[in-house]
Length: 163
Picture: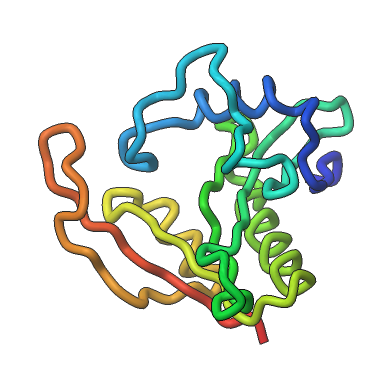
């Protein structure tokens, strides 16, 4: 992983991020349909500055994580939420997911957050294990929250203190 650096996304990353999003999409990690080729990755609600990207020395993107303030009010200014994490299949197994999570937590702290949360599908056991190893704890479960590929799937709420 020494040839990878993590930085804030830029508008020029859009096509590479869309391609990465499409490569990593699966019904156990997304409630949305597979993003269409050529569709926009960034929009009014998904801005470049919300994303951290992992980039190889040669410029190839290896992963991303999105961090947002989930409730855009002063009363929720102390919380950030991870709303998307992806690691290219070619780069899995070398600690990149954990590095993205830790960098996201550092960025959340820099933004003044004292807590970070996320939601993960109960069927995504790999991600659930990664989050638990990174210090996230289950804080709630929404039973049968989604109907995906013919089965009801729980939505698991996880969180971690940043202090």
